[in-house]
Length: 406
Image (tube, rainbow, N blue to C red; front, side, top):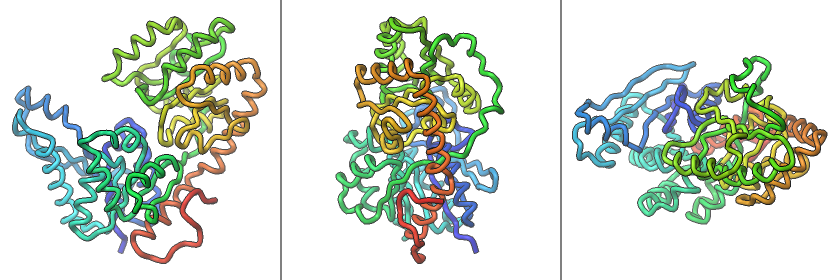
């Protein structure tokens, strides 16, 4: 009989977001390894529920179950009963639904993604039922939310009571081990993987005719951690030397939109910035071959899928030496690395690549080769197979946790 895995996550395709993409990829890997895979999708932020309550749109709690490519997906929504409901009311409701799923399916192991939204609730349920639980830290959950007095206690409790914790960068793992030293023997770090992409399959994107000169591009949901202000500074400096376009594939997050629009107005290069707005993943990928230099000036960023996609596209990359960006890339070999929050270093690196097309080509080829070899799905799958064998108490495989070969 197949062992049953329940992954818990705040998003899952068709939801847009890196956590959802990673959860889907890992779910498929576990399915291929022979597990019966369930995914429970829920949020721990209830702004939409509050809006509906204020509008008089009440509802019972509900769980919508579907099957997607062999993966059983359960979307959990709490009841809306009152305009005075608090987070604990909604979370208690979600917990009851997840508990009901377990009572029906009898899961063998739980696995939560993004520790501050799903981790505590999932870990509590697993421990109450004497089951192993894996927690996967993706980035902002430790980089930002560990500073929240309201969330810090739950985060550290969850780390301490996990059967195993995985991280997408060694930097994240180090922070968690500082917060909870006892996890030293039950934690490991390994990178996201990426499936090879045929970029020739995509149609020419709609805004290509607005791109002039050297195209410096970045992809993502642009917010505080992305370091975009330093990229604006660098492009302002470089514009006096050469013709360029700054292409931003994505959009500003709504809660910070006012700040970024102000930064753009004050940048002095607003007329040379092209912003696509929110686009599908396929359209975002279609823009990558149009970019001469891919910039990822993050202040912290886990292991961003956008980086791996740019590597597969063979783009010359300028990135910051943070998290998996600085762990995957090697300065001068397959990218140029700079310190975070340094407009000056970013300007120097971009200038070097603008003036040396041959170096751009060299770095791009090296980055693509690394993505194909070290970031292949079979590498990540072996790491997950090892982790699951640890928590389910079967004999260890012959390879060790971490980045391994196919």
